[in-house]
Image (cartoon, rainbow over all chains, first blue to last red):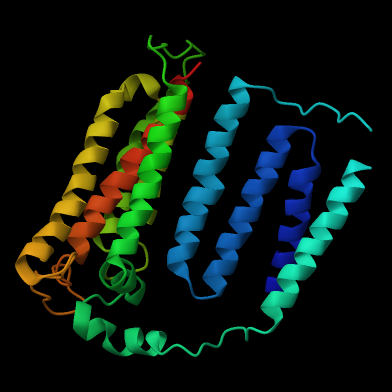
Length: 83
Length: 227
């Protein structure tokens, strides 16, 4: 139970970090980490089917597709104009 | 200023969702469907993995819709990224011997593991979608590490995808002709816990595995080749 609470906390922190980072590569890795912890939590909740799908699609393939997209566009987010 | 306004809007939406969900008890349900599937699932479908018996047998038509959504997404992506002239992949640094050999060694093993997962979908956790994603990650490994060795022809992905999609629909239509409704489980159920059991469930999952694998691998391939 304690482990699950820690995992959920880490998941929340990395989800917020994914939104805050200006370096898009970092935020993609943080988003992949969210999927990875979600897969572990699904396994703890006795849903191995969903955990496998989440680990392979969310943590591996989506991250790879986003990284390919970044390689073809820009890596750093521009500063937002304050209004 | 804009951030403050969006934060307040987000709070309003979040409280709205929280209030509406507060009445629903967590983890309990009035529906008898769960008990029905757990009690009769194995006898009716022959699949020991209840999740698979729901996904492919009881809710097979929904799965067809799900596969169609994935198909449309892949087609849309290819249409957006399509170019008249095929751009050759930029000649980067050649991968080192260790990377190249390791990648060549791992690729068939990953394919084998993915195939194992979708062929045993009715017995162990996993199924067509999971196995297909694992196969696609094997193709991702070759794209990263040993592109020259594989030299995938992009139209082969499309052909595999179309053939397996057609196979799914044809299996369903045979059920319609034979027994009166779409995706009827018309093959013999066999004894549970054996590889050749559960009627059409493994056949459909093999089709889904090929379809999902070639679709996601095709998406990655399109992304790498474009621009």
